[in-house]
Length: 313
Image (tube, rainbow, N blue to C red; front, side):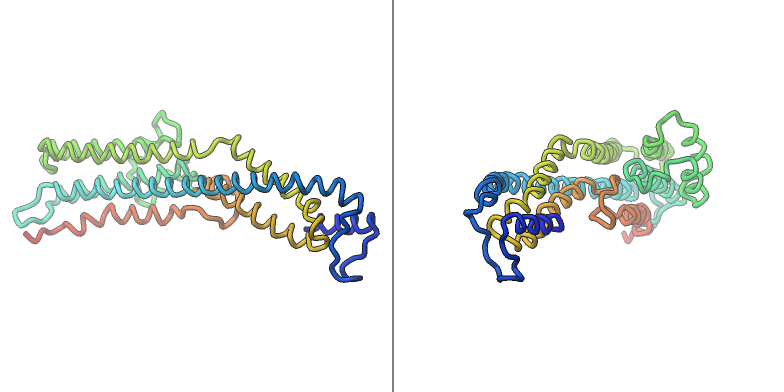
């Protein structure tokens, strides 16, 4: 808008036309060589580009929002699969004669629940920049001091020959290994149907978190994003020249509206493409509050055990 105001002053001085405060609003003289020549041609090209920019930008926003929705769905699927896994275990452990959980069953469910919580936290630490400190040595030691893992588990994680962003694979395997041990010990039902259901939920969980990584990595071709950015920038850049032909001084206000809507939609689309705010594109923008997701998953890891501690049958 400041650039548009400067151009209005320049154009008025060149064409010797009065300002709005001198004579009220008078449309620019179309017979003037500056208006009839260069600026009219710029207006014609600008209107052609307006159609293209509007179409491409709205498509870009629509696809970006679809990506955001797909990502949200994948996040909730992983959370739901963790809950389903724990529900399947608590309903298939061997119980005492009165239907209550045995001490061995409670210990088993606590250990698996702890592994699911550790897996979920380390998984998001590998994906979200603001939680990345948790997968460092300092972060792992801090989690061990808060009871999120045992000292033995900490030693295993620190000694593993894996990148820090792949540490969540360890507690993911521990979940199934502990289930197999419980089956051998008679704590968990060992029939084929139960084992098959547990393995099926486990694989659904694995596919769910793998889909999140694939979605982030293939969110949008960079060339397309750059094309939209160049298209919007050139459209906004030439708006002061094009709009002056019809609006004169009021082109300053019109330019402000054009910039607000077109640049705003472009920025909104890019915010949708960064649901974890790893790019830190915009402060306090639209991104997932993973703290809520983690807390909900942590609650689910113990909720089923508490609800099914005693059977009414």
